[in-house]
Length: 337
Image: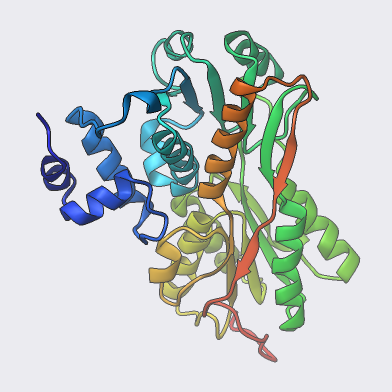
């Protein structure tokens, strides 16, 4: 029989840490990657906590992640959402079927689920297919295309406005936008509210941004490449707003490699607040996106729908907060170019 010690050794953590993670102790501060290692080790070893017979659940929660497993590891935002869902399920004795859109027969594997949570961006046709699997459906990270399907999204308008308010107060009037492009299964571009909010704010506050607008992938490599292009153009802003932390961290490294001081010459703000932000040099100012809380909240909604079905969908926007670190400062009278 697999013991807690076996799980801890496989995950490379102490037995105490493994126990607290498996018991959903939210007071334990560990990186999402460590939490995931413990959960994966428990599943791989078929570890089962002892439960009272009365606590056994008849419900099975399905989780569909639009990212591949490799992409999820590279972007902890989506990983944190899924961890929030799975921790709720663990605490409430719900069975879980987890699948990735890139998996073979992913829809077939979800056919026996009672409730379904889909993480990411999907077409209306895909959402219709999900509803055939379960009426207890919730979308996370995109607004529902129909009023009967519940969804949880971030309040991008509030988040981006707060970040730009901070830069504006610091005197920045030339701000770059480094974003990412996301495409749906039908090839259409998914509109990013961060971009539309950014451009509207700059227009209304007299901020120069058009020469500094760049979009590529949501990755550190893309951030590095876009920032390098800005530097090579010889026309630099005094601040950069990036639509994700990986983009921001890649851009920050490109600027430093070219001899620019951060934040002395260029200030940076990211988005998501992944764990790497705290370890960057300098630590990255960023918008904290409550990814884990989105997952837990979403799982709670679906669990409620399983017990008390409703025809009305809930459309929830979760607020974000700006986390101030050392990558921003007041604009200098002149910038290096």
